[in-house]
Image (tube, rainbow, N blue to C red; front, side, top):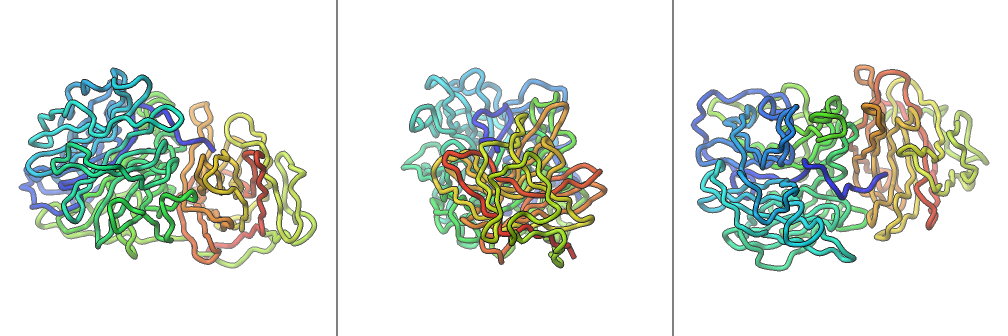
Amino acid sequence: MRPPPRVRTLAPLVAAALAAASPVTLPRPAAAAPPATTYTNPVSAPAADTFADPSVVRGSDGAWYAFGTSDPLRAGETTPHLLPILRSTDLVNWSFAGDALTTRPAWAAPAAGIWAPDVRRVGDRYLLYYTVTDTTLNPGDDSAIGVATAPTPLGPWTDSGRPVVAPRAAPGGGFLWTFDPALLSDAQGRLWLYYGSYFGGIFTAPLSADGMTVTGAATRVTIDNRYEGAYVVHRDGWYYLFGSAANCCAGPTTGYSVFAGRSRTPTGPFIDRDGLSLLDSRAGGTPVVQPNGNRWIGTGHNAVVTDLAGQDWLLYHAIDRDAPYLNEPYGINRRPMLIDRLEWRDGWPTATASDGRRPAPVTGRHQRPGPAPAASVPRIGPLDRAASDEFDGGAVGGGWTWVRQDDAATVTGGALRWPTEPADLTGDANTAGVLLRTPPSGDYVVETKLTIDLGVDTVRNYQQAGLVAYAGDDDFARLSHVAIWNTRQIEFGRELTFAGRLSYGGMVEGPPAATTWLRLAHTTVRGEHHFRAGWSRDGVHWAWGGTWTFPPGPAPRVGLVSHGGDDPQATALFDYFRVYRVR
């Protein structure tokens, strides 16, 4: 496991938007051409090969305007645009409309990134909030939030001349990450600005009626080292906080994903579907969109827009796993803009990243809404006893093999007891032991019941234990309960070789417990091996998350790991290793 990045390439992050500070349906545009009835992602193509951190607002002309992070837009380009703008009359077909800024703000350092715009209409003008990664106000990297105003989405934009959220000193030195602004107009019409990232967490602060000045103390709404890219929607008496988690920009192993929590007030506390707070060390969060095994990975940093039929849509960026970089390998990540239908199921938002043709948003008079995509979860079948092990003897059962045997792992008291090794699998070291067995052919689900005491709140990087799908030391997917700085998370990490170098990244899932049940569901799709993460805090109620893929060929072996440090050492107790057939 690697920490969330504390230095980012000129390309990542943030919140979103639409016509008002929360999704609303506005009058129909006078479209110059019939709106699209279907679409295929990425919708930013061919106007832009990359368009990260999209924010969308509807103009008084009825068109939609998307604003993106300052990147080069097309393969072969190397000069970043300054908050590029795309225009569309149907949310599907977009054209380049210029850059929001013609010069950098005077208070931005010369090499600062200008990231993560959030554009809203407030009164009779438009507000553009943006991240500056380094200012002239302090030595060192001291990020801040700026704001500009304009009479139309195309400008001309006038910067306020100062940060609306100034750099914030961090305890112990340096500055907190003041990234990813997002505006909310609450039920009473009061304005709130959300901002923040992994180093410090996400905060919200009240704004003046014109949106230009912070008027009160900020409130932290998420724990640090878990979320960034906030976006808030008010719906049915709840405020839903969307936040993105994991590394935005790990190329072919980017697991960036969107989660949600909700609160009755803009300042929280925000809790997930299971009642767990986004402020907890075992960080709460209900998955909204994650990589699902098709071409799209790194599905994050969202906005929400509502079409003329009242249907909500998620706009976000993602990475094509086969073309993860804009130009050279390990350079700028290519993150085009996608759109997919946002469903609300039992009070919680969910979306599926699509790579085939889908019914388009309703933006014209004669369109009809398309059907909602069906939810899909693995159907657990009978237990394959021959492939399973209950750990009820004095040693592991038949069928197991070791990569780097750890003699500290023993079977006693009906469980495999395995102290965390001071070792790891990531990178070139490959020092950790791996206990493996060959799975059955076809589709199956492996499950274990894991108890490990990693404490809470303290830093114990990166002690972990869990399941692994293993094709080799440099080709594996690891689902583990892990300590990441002061948080405890379920991480689904992936390491592989791309363009002659190792790439490691991970997606995170729901919160672990002292005892956590973990599953990996294997399916074969066009010869590829897909592994989907599942977890439970009670062994009864299960949730399913993201998917990592392996290329066609021999199936990876599956097994267990326990490593990441011994100061203090933790011991993983695996009650069993079970293999189920899939119905």
